[in-house]
Length: 256
Length: 72
Image (cartoon, rainbow over all chains, first blue to last red; front, side):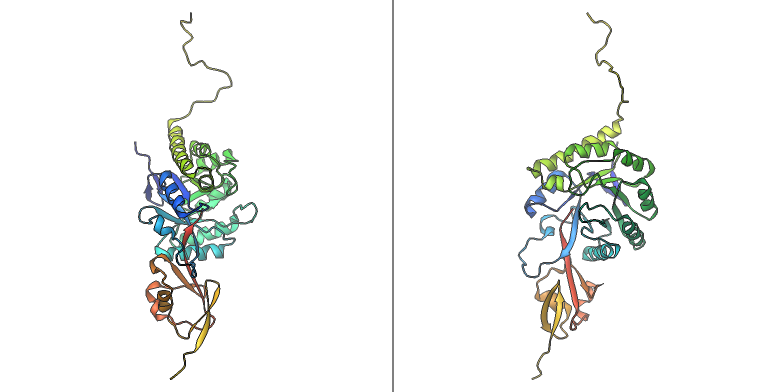
């Protein structure tokens, strides 16, 4: 049975999306991405270094023809900045599949949902396919869906916190109400967090810090790859019901 | 001989002195910037990369040249 991951009518093999920030260098980043098996990587839009031209370029290490670049709006704190950033991203090379992330607080990095909602609507009208970083509020997720989002990406916990999924119930509610791709974005700390996300019925996970800042990023990239596959298989297999009492695994008949 | 007038522009947040009426295409070429990997904004308006030769720079113009870097 084929189980493809589809976002904005595009098929992807891997359900793991990885970020390309926080690595020691480009080489480490590129190798981690390769080991993770991800087909999509998030990238940021920043000023070209006019002075130091020898600085390595991301595109020299990760080929955008082989891996889908997902430009983000990291560092944007209002709709105006986010729209400007994504319009520039589209201009670089025709990118329409984008990650919208409008932050509201510099400490907890929670998304500013009013600005996010407004931006989603405008971008969708401009033909962008918007994957939206959001809080884990089912009502807001519904509004984003109605505004033309291409994917709902609720946080597990604050960006870079490594706390894992804090509100599994909300994620389950969002899963039940939407047919859009549901991707857990931000806050994962270890591979098992990705498995839990997939077992909750999410279509994918987006991870950056947990891999980039692990003691062994290459091994962690591989661990996340396997964790996502395991979680998806587990979800599709249909878990047993929870029991408050024991139920022996070996037959009780014929005990000597 | 007519002396070429110098103007000041703001390029990626830094002041730069250039010849008046310099075309953006020339500026990009001089800076050895790979055009395929960037987007260019002039005074907060995105420029069509195919028409850079038509745009002449004026005093106090603000230019932003951006590309993709690692991010989460």
